[in-house]
Image (tube, rainbow, N blue to C red; front, side, top):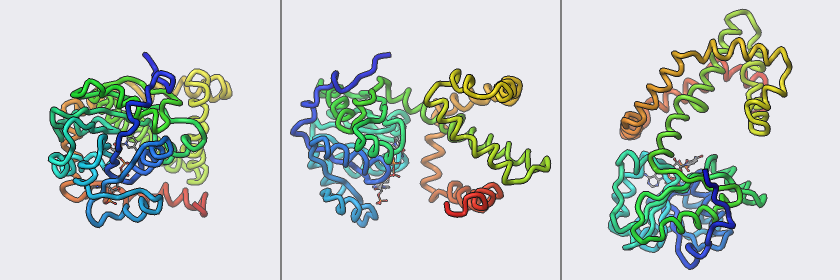
Length: 323
Ligand SMILES: NC(=O)c1ccc[n+]([C@@H]2O[C@H](COP(=O)([O-])OP(=O)(O)OC[C@H]3O[C@@H](n4cnc5c(N)ncnc54)[C@H](OP(=O)(O)O)[C@@H]3O)[C@@H](O)[C@H]2O)c1
């Protein structure tokens, strides 16, 4: 697997080009500010009456309408929520300059056909592997965040150079850019969200907490055991890998992990993971996301309300009253 770093990137592919960032949220703000600090000419494209406008203007960024931003730019980066890409593309498709580039930070909307970019456009992916707040703070510290890159359409013959120059300008060339495709990035990201880090891990923490409490343990100790130690685990894995993490813990913890881990994550879990991957690839999740957004996010809103008033959250508040 080849990593691309700043030394391999020709920043000239972006020099003199105007970059419009569509959306000024988690990724939009960070990418816009990093690009500007790297010398790019940046403007923000927002819908009329956008709540984000004041914040972008506080940073002295020019704010344009969606269509005006697309008409102004040589590179238009789609950094609004994935489920709105289709509607936004519909609004800007006629305005995008012929032969310009259209970028994404997640492959979902192109992979699952929510949008079909015009054939004259370069279409690229620069997907930082972490949140915008960290992308910005790493950049300010002289570091960068790993990102995946891909090209879906190379109309100009320069799409790869533009993508890599963009990745360099947001700071990711300092850490490394890894080659992928829109399909691979979208499928792996959606799989992980459901089956591993963001879906399964929190449910495992809650199930462990509830098992201990049902077994007579105090909620506070159950929380500290099952949830509080996650950061220690994450830091150890980040610093030393899974093998190094196991070396760093006590023999007691290591033997416990050996005896218990594979009883919990058994072949049934692996089969359901495979089922989720197949469903993601078949477009089931993309359809669910579009339907959820179209209905005004009823499932997400109900879940957020329920989470906030849950027993495990009450325990967390008792342990950390200030947070
Ligand atoms: N969040 C992450 O950590 C992360 C990491 C890697 C990749 N990504 C990808 O980056 C992209 C952006 O994600 P994000 O989390 O940064 O999004 P986000 O923070 O939710 O984006 C919010 C911004 O999008 C604008 N927006 C929302 N709906 C809009 C609409 N219908 N029309 C026009 N503008 C609209 C909002 O403007 P208003 O103020 O008008 O609502 C706001 O400026 C996605 O493709 C995502 O998958 C995200």
